[in-house]
Image (cartoon, rainbow, N blue to C red; front, side, top):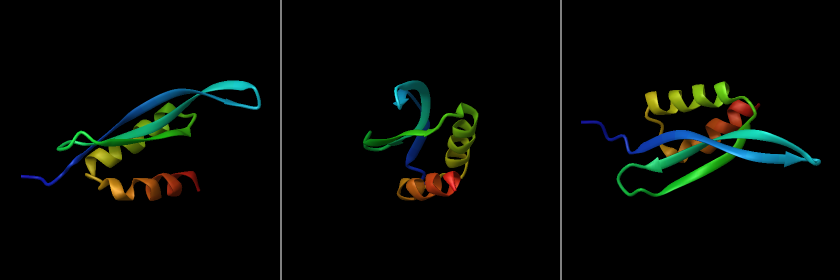
Length: 76
């Protein structure tokens, strides 16, 4: 049995910069056992890019403590 505790999913939100509206895509992470979660909003304007990252996080069973670093690495 796997010790995987987290589920990653897409967050979509309306954002604005300098009066211009756009859709920002982020990542929601939820602890499967406790229901607790956190959302990283507006990671990218590319839905496909964020969906690929979410799939990778789920496939590799990423521990949520590493998600912020993974997002930062993606943006570099």
